[in-house]
Length: 110
Image (cartoon, rainbow, N blue to C red; front, side):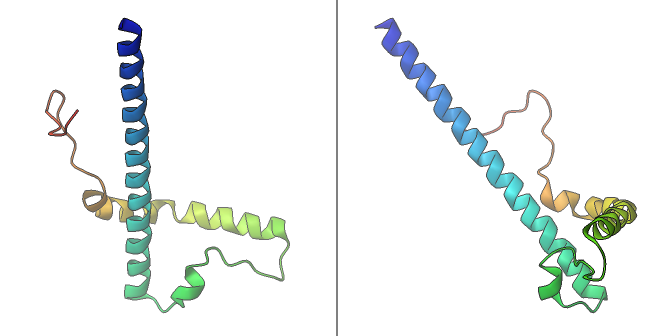
């Protein structure tokens, strides 16, 4: 009987961990989508870009080699670091849930 109970507990723990993993994945996905949407809104609000083109990501220069385009991409990423940090701070309260204090009840079931 003890083995049966232990197996049931193990199954329940595995199920809870799978649920937690799926929940976290969904939250990360939703956060990513929210961030991308907000960034695109910022681009649309002050600049004239074809959003269809922007939605395809980094635009390569066909007159350049792959290495040159890669170098350009990394330079653009480096240049975007400070503005990215500033923009992320604006969206942080909207995207991240508030921190809970240690010992606070989560209000969930389990």
